[in-house]
Structure formats: C-alpha cells, structure tokens
Length: 157
Image 1: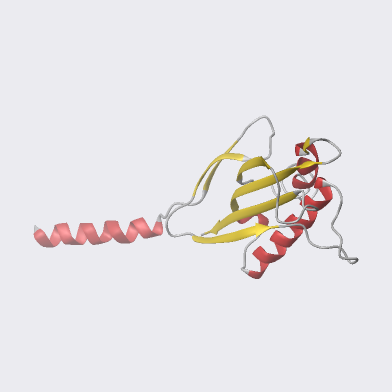
Image 2: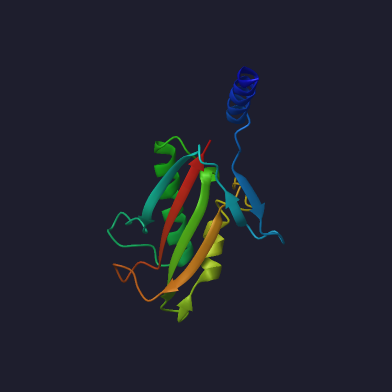
C-alpha cells in the first residue's frame, strides 16, 4: 500500500508540473485597455524595470507633450524588454506617474492614453494583451521637463 501511495504521489507531482498555470488576465471591460487582475504563476520568469523617463531629443531637450513623452518612454521600455527576450505583451503591471502639464494645470491623462493606446488597445499593431495599471498625479519628477515616468513588471512562462 505504501508503494502505491508513493507512486500515485509521484505521478501527481510530475503531472502538476505538466499542468502548470499560465498567466491569467481579467479585462477591465468596456473596451478600456487594462486588466483589472493579472495572476502570475510562481514558475514564471519575472522582470522588474526601474522607472523609465522621457528620452532626450537630439538637441538635448525633451518632448513637450505627455503624449510624445509617453510614446518615447514606451519605445524605451519595448527595447529594454526585447533585450530580455520579452515583449510588451509580457507586461503584467504598469505604474504611471504623471506631473501636471503646465498648460493644463493638471495631469494630462488624455495625452497619456493617446500614447498608451499606440502600444495597448485598438491601434493597428497594438497589443491586445494588456497589463494591470495604476496612474498617479505627482508633484514633480527629477527634472522639471519630465511630465511622466513609467515602471513595469513583465512576466513570461
């Protein structure tokens, strides 16, 4: 009986590895391009990217709008992920820090979304697999020209 129990237990352990859970996402609904819940199994490779800020333009300045800065940051994130063998579809969590746009007097969430949906959402070539996401208005970032900073966590089975 002990041998049978040991064999069944060993078979169960080996099958559980074969049936490992995949990354699960729960869409927000209403077409909003985020997931409300992302569940990552323990055996997934997880990569944490530090906050990414707008890339400097050729003349050393920074793009002037939140949308342009968002696109620049997401292109940087995309390249960094690719260097790790990952894609934008592997992002499971995104945190966005937005500074009030001087011309609007508040964070430009609409401008952020215009840039974001070029990478996630309905735009041609945009990922349909979307991360869980939070967005915050903050008082400031390290440089006054920066309107946005984004950090992500990516995972892949």
